[in-house]
Image 1 (cartoon, helix red, strand yellow):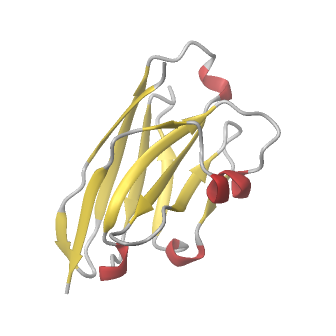
Image 2: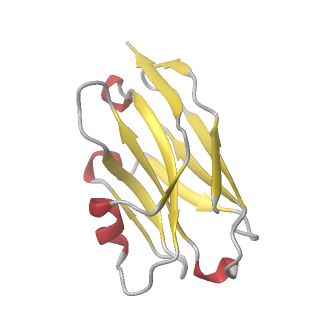
Length: 128
């Protein structure tokens, strides 16, 4: 069973930066095949995809975060990161790390439909 544990959420002022981390463990497939992503859910809103990195290293982002957020992972693919700059109040949400081993899905499809394994989330609050 894949385990995902997020960290790094905090309360910061608009314009500031945060880096979220997600520790991944417990999977038996080769790390080559893991696809990972960040999703968020604000109070009263549906979950939305923020950024995804496919097993081949290709990335995709929600339009709302392009140019401000960067998804990356360490060489072992055991830690996923989300660097968030120029934060806005509308970025306030619970941020979730997710993963899957599906083949045949493009990055953008994961961003829209989600992934198979989820963490419990880390809270990001942006104030004016």
